[in-house]
Image 1 (tube, one colour):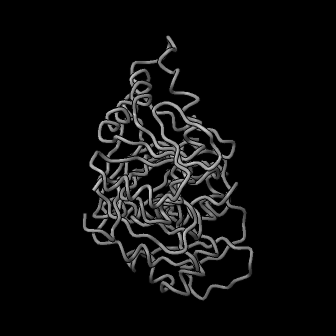
Image 2 (cartoon, chains in turn cyan, purple):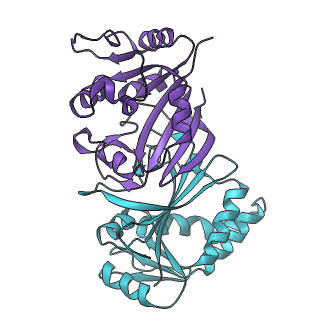
Image 3 (cartoon, chains in turn purple, red):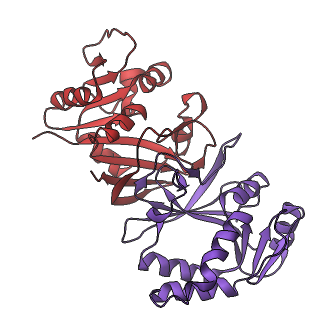
Length: 190
Length: 181
């Protein structure tokens, strides 16, 4: 069955944006960006909430037209444009860049997608991921922990009523000090 | 030469260092293998400094002084508190001094070894005062969803760190970081 992966760059204290919405502390260097690009080869569908879709669609479609853009950004822009996407939103009227708009039941849609043949799927941002967590739809968590504490901002994970045990499947340290921790659900025998 | 000031802490993936009701069972449940990084820090520790919330939980639930590091460490313990308290044990000192003086007291008592900070509140004060040198964090594979945050809101401004080492011990990941000042 296709897996749903929730992966984010996060501060040591658990935030994906600082108090002013700033992300510059998490901008990847060339090594990490290349890793992100390579990771896309294991994924054939992005599942987006409205906010993340709008942020991505505001930047990536033209990122490869910037003459100063480094090669790994140009490559990602091309990956992003051609990657099939599903956008979950009740307020958007239309979506572009190889995206399909879904207004209906999230669990029904995702379970249908999981049962289809294909590679893994990624989910973002935090709001949609929180809904997925409540519905038990996330199979793996990929945290790219950045060596910084922000002291507030938008958390990667929502408030939960009960704790969720996970299983560590990979630890990797990148040159710039970012640490990738990969987990899967502990309650399933994948 | 004075020792270093190190915050030694276990944290859930969602950034909590204690669960609801200051529970720490979620750490003990998942610890299975010894941590060489923790052993190294404990061996170099000359004194411990904590806040009142940490101490009250340690005393009520985790056997007080004898429960620190499972009884594997003996030395002076300083508790920073505004509430009056009297210690019956010469190893345990309550102090209401400012954090800078409390850290200096602990460093002096450590006699050249390191001072380890336990709990969140004093560590946050130490970061803000520019007194913290390193963090050793054990990342526990659990989402707690609620509890005491590593950094309580607005207690600390954005602070850059430098990753010194990343070590896996069983299901735990130990990350040691230097605080950039």
